[in-house]
Length: 192
Image 1 (cartoon, rainbow, N blue to C red):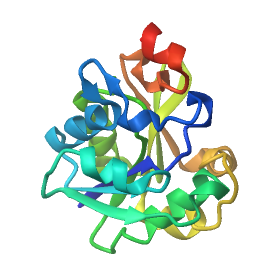
Image 2 (cartoon, helix red, strand yellow):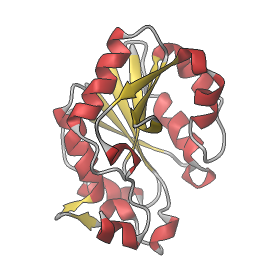
Image 3 (cartoon, helix red, strand yellow):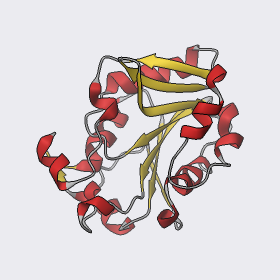
Image 4 (cartoon, one colour):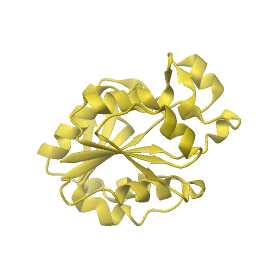
């Protein structure tokens, strides 16, 4: 089994106090774009890590049996705490998992499935989506990287682990700029 950890706990600080995940983007709540994509993908379990305005986020989210919620009570301390909260829900049944940002609405099922298939078939432990040699998101990991990931701190996510483990890295080439497009500011909602 391969699961997805969807990071949805952030405080949306560049949005002026509004939680961007519950804002409408192309007639749908922002978080539901990536959730719909994940539901239609090969991913078997989606772990939504919520935090900031948890009850509002839970209320607007699409309903599906693949979705599991976990609340990160330490969401103010940064992305690492959300990743670690999600990792607690990754069981030994998983051969791997993806870590995905909830504010990336244009990521396609094709991108998700390509990372999924790479985790299943490649003899590496870290899988990063790339477009024209630039690293993007989402990122995938084999289960063997779980203990290492549990040691991360701060707000930088898994970047340090990726840099320190280049021999374990597999670059998943995708034909989409969507792996760079996250929505962080009111202007991003207009420009994308």
